[in-house]
Length: 459
Ligand SMILES: *[C@@H]1O[C@H](CO)[C@@H](O)[C@H](O)[C@H]1NC(C)=O
Ligand SMILES: *[C@@H]1O[C@H](CO)[C@@H](O)[C@H](O)[C@H]1NC(C)=O
Ligand SMILES: *[C@@H]1O[C@H](CO)[C@@H](O)[C@H](O)[C@H]1NC(C)=O
Ligand SMILES: *[C@@H]1O[C@H](CO)[C@@H](O)[C@H](O)[C@H]1NC(C)=O
Ligand SMILES: *[C@@H]1O[C@H](CO)[C@@H](O)[C@H](O)[C@H]1NC(C)=O
Image (cartoon, rainbow, N blue to C red; front, side, top):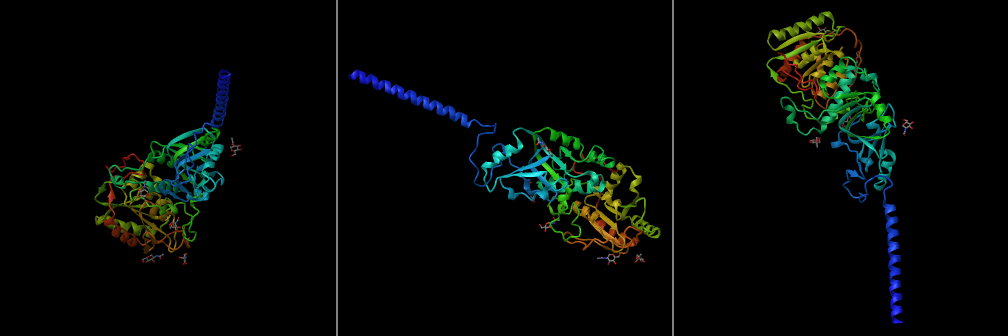
């Protein structure tokens, strides 16, 4: 009997273990089923409810604005996502980003979205990001500049170099850590972009001197047009940009201070960022004498008599050995000659208008802009300020110049603004006399940050 009972107990124990083993097996099996990811996303880490927020979450690297490098219309973004023509910012903290309209506004308002959890509900971002962005990504290494604007204005030399390129480089330079290196010979500069991407422009929209100068300024950079953008859309995958400077004119002209007279300028906000003084990387070897350049357009706008008076006043400066003087008409010069002459000029004189575009290649110099009496416009002055040039406005026999932080009160397209303009020569030469001691001339000068120590030497 005892033996039978003992045998039964063993049978019961075996049965019990078998059932237990079965239960454990099924539990494990179903457990494996339930933890098998529905998609190849890495296993969840603990939800990041505490600060600081993680930079990498569930495999989605969060989008950031490095060192706060943003003014409306010019934004540096690390890990910006793009899918089917729409940009996505992935963040755990929506409030740390500017308004969408300050990043990207027109042409199409909705083409930038935020993937952000509602009020620190960090766990949900995983599902949201994967749901929207899918699971495959294509990684775009290094630094790209995306100019999200239609071609109309960008075809213009001034709008392209004086606003898009100057503004983008100035804002980008905000992250520049090593100022002294920029004064080295040849000057150092921040990493150049690998691509310029122009989603709404076609091949040929930067025709003529634009394209040529872009190649000179950024020798190893590719320019991609709308066909490339359309290809990215058709990829049906998410493109991850390592670092992007996102440029948008409409956003840039949304000035926070609508009361200032230059608020509609694209580069008004760019003046607000702090940058090293030599951010254009265009330092130089000094030559001994100063060089002044009078630029007169084809449609010379100074009255004949005043033109002669101005030339006479400049000739006196030359004769006294105060500076070398040249009188040129840019339209008659090749691109190379223009840059060559800009590279050695330390004082540029011209009538208000596109003649003064040459200042774009003269960082650190002086520009003297002749207006019709009482007339004023900020276009050239804002370029000068962004580039670190000293700007003078001349009204016949009077002039003004403004220090940082002070401004002419208003735009004034006065009577005769575009007509024949008077100028008193000795007034201009007095400005040059006062500037020259502080204004060395350059023997060499690079024309844009990327110019590989371009040989615009005088020899
Ligand atoms: C891509 O965007 C277009 C409109 O911009 C839309 O019609 C199309 O359905 C989208 N494609 C996918 C795959 O979402
Ligand atoms: C961030 O910008 C400041 C100037 O505002 C500069 O001093 C600092 O070096 C920059 N930091 C980095 C990491 O670029
Ligand atoms: C520049 O910054 C100041 C203060 O930070 C602000 O009041 C002003 O509106 C800004 N100007 C532009 C054009 O962004
Ligand atoms: C310009 O200034 C000169 C010198 O003061 C003066 O003689 C001349 O009349 C002025 N011209 C005009 C148009 O005001
Ligand atoms: C604008 O110019 C006109 C002359 O054309 C002058 O009468 C007027 O006072 C100027 N306005 C301002 C605000 O300077």
